Image 1: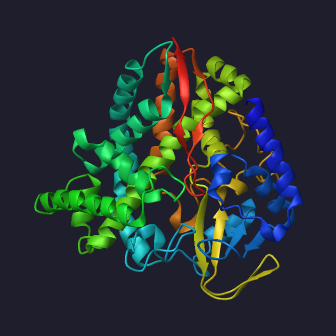
Image 2: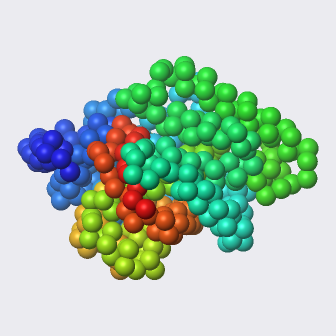
Image 3: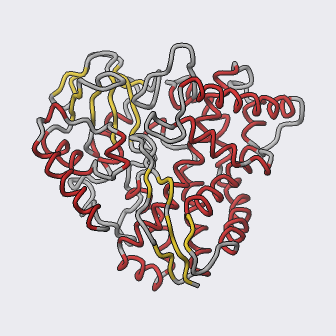
Length: 415
């Protein structure tokens, strides 16, 4: 961490503890771009674990910041609905994208069941050698001793290849998946964001591209890819275009952003904690545990939203029917009442899988095992080839309070 970054973090701590509680807005994307949200969450966990923010561009919201409270909301779909959105922004009336993660049972359960075979233990066993071969090819193509961007050359490449396989998507166009994922989640602060109109155009293009694949597969025998599953699934084959697009965006973002940012996050975490990197070099059996610790430490999706279905008394606060409730996974994963020494990155941490990053209850991440598998494989292959991945500059972070990720990570490899 350079002097400028240290000053930034010091100033953030002073601000977080001096401003009135009511003014704290942890959904500010700038806090995530500068990685300065931590003291704000720390203060909320101590002083206002269920906190109301009245002023926000997307309307007022409640923040739930402690591990057990997040778990209580996440596992209670009777009182807290996932409709109409899982992010702080409301859907635009003339551009609503229904998706099963933003649905309640029974429709949620029926649609989720259609795609879950793609991440069954049997299919993961089939995918593992394919992922390993690709990981090896990616790593073997990297320059030794020269600076390059890890996000672009490794994190995006591996996850996009895997996603293209899951969709059986035309290989030469696979980077379209990355772009659609990024444009779907880009806030107004993102360099990708041009206008709402532009975003719609790009997502309609995504819908059209996938409709062509759908039409091919609906007329063919059912296969093991996501498009074929959706085209032949009883609860999904009659989806309209917007619902199809909504579920596509869900699967693309879910399969892309999370794994990609955890791959980048692992490189950053090991560079910031050289003792842990040494520990890893000395014991490669720690890789699976390191993967879980990285997913906790990174928390690639910072929050999920619910909406109160009735007036609810919750931890001494009255949440009114219809109000937004934001579960800050990124904060719950640093709750020292549940996780010992939570700000530290400890690759041999006991119970490392005890984190919130995949959510809980009926909406627990359907692809969590695939995410872990990709991270495990890439690190097994990295450790065969390189003695060190050296960070050569500050990471560039995504300006988003939803996707907690990296635009760029400058590194140099040592053979």
